[in-house]
Structures are given as C-alpha cells and as structure tokens.
Length: 228
Image 1: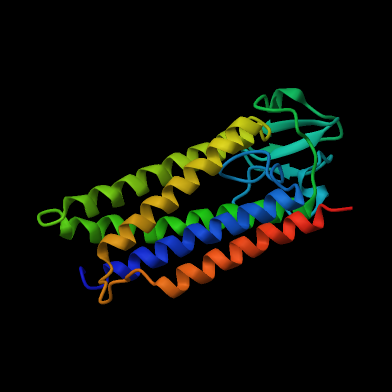
Image 2: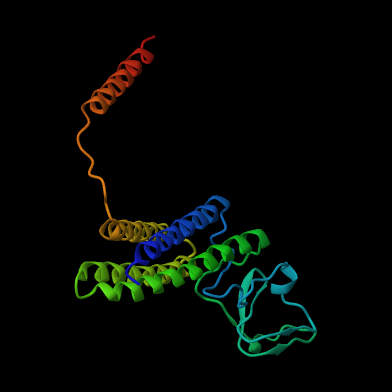
C-alpha cells in the first residue's frame, strides 16, 4: 500500500482538478440551478431530458419525491400520484427552499455531470484515507492530512447542497471555492511529503540574471507605452 500511495494522492488531486473544471463549466454556462434539489435532480437519480417530464400533466403518474413545475412554482409529490383532469394540491407540497422554477435541459445535464464528477471523486478520497492509515506509526502527518482532506471533501458536499438551497448565494459560492482550494493545498502538501526527491535544486546565478533582465525590460517597456 505504501508504495502505491503517491499514485493514489495524484489520482485524488486529479479528481479535484476535474471537479474544478466541471464547476467552471457550470459557472460559465449559468447552470448552477439546473437541478433545483440535491442530491437528486427534480427528484430523479437520472435527470429529466424534456420539460414534459417535470411539468404537471393530467392522467399521468408521478413517483414519490418527484419535483414538478406548475404555475411557475415547484411542487414535490408526497406519495406516488396518479393525476386526474384537475390538479389536487393535497397530493403535493410546495418546495420552499427557493423559488427558482425553470427548466433547461442543457443546464440540468451540465449540473448533473458536475455532481457526478464530484461523487466519483469520493472513490479516490476513500482510498486515500485507507492507504494513509499505513503511515500512522511512522508519519502521522500523512494520515492526518489525508483525513483532513477527506473531511473537507465531505464539507464541500454539504456546501454544494447549500449553494443550491440558497439559489446560488454569492457568499456560499465563495466559501465553496475557497474550501476547494484548501483541499488542493492539502493534497499538494501531501504529495510533497510522500514524493522521493532525488535531486536538490541549487541557486542558479545565470537564471537569476536573466529573470532580472526580463523583469527590467518589461518595466521599461511599460514606461514607453505610457508616453504620448
């Protein structure tokens, strides 16, 4: 296990980078509310592909927990419902966590892929924790860092739910991102601890002079560009 631990750390780190990539796509496309509930999507394990599936219809059967849109509001089926020609409010309860009641299949599936990526990342995190226990006697720091990253990942999952429940509240989104960066920092620190460094890097005078020359040249270039 110890021999393969650095690989597990790298895979875990890569999975977090994938989550950041998927999250970035969600933000760029405005798909954060593609699924109004969490962890399911409109009450489905596999999200709907058409608006008809989440819009109230007469003579249609809905399973318990399914979320529908009616009159620009979200309703949750309290039990298995077979509708008639009229909407019966006794079979439904209003979804009160937020009032966002729109459906866009592209946003829904973008957000679903983001959640699926996060869920699959749980596998390498579990392996990380299991493998790290082998270091407890000789290097407790490795085990503690691994458990710390795992616990923060669980906290991130809860934050993801909170982001949806608060209809993308900016402060919650910011905390969500910062915690993700902390997880990456812990994993990079962990990778540094378990990676064998066969070569030490020394001060390079030539590189230092070239760096100074480049920076100085940039500064002068900036001054010239400001002249009329």
